[in-house]
Image 1 (cartoon, rainbow, N blue to C red):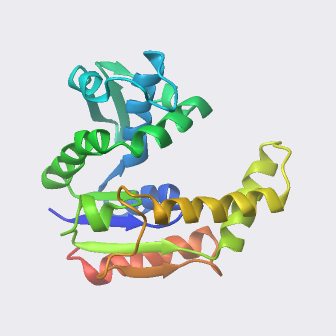
Image 2 (image 1 turned 90 degrees about the vertical axis):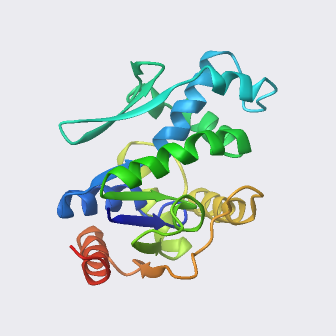
Length: 222
């Protein structure tokens, strides 16, 4: 099986570009963030807050998370229920961030992600795919862009949605997220030694996708 690991900082377009890359080469796209959102939803439904002062391992022991592909689309199931839409709320995002910092949760989801890669040709994105989850991935890509470029893209996205925010606020948040991701104790964001850097600072979406496809096709037997 062929596995493509794509890591990088917030706002680099990992999800969009990973999904489009997978579509282009006929691979399955694994949205690892959705898995953490699903676990976060479970804790949220049980009344936990982001401090997670609860029996984490006990709750995980009574939790099942499944990924199923329906018409080529990844759907996520929590204890048998399709929660693919429920996990996209702001509250789920906050809980996803909280649970992702907990070692028992990362261990709980690690084998699931590796099993998907053993059984399918996958494109998987995240913060630690090439360094922790799939250290032997066929191709490792570190997708990045300058903080200014990433903030500008996120700012435009928020403005298009009618969100009232300043560019400085978005930029400052981006810089803080970079720092937090790179300095957290558990699976910090870093470029794998054998990863290929894809810097999209000067690229639009189409150019960024073309760059990723070029890297993948040059380094995998596709």
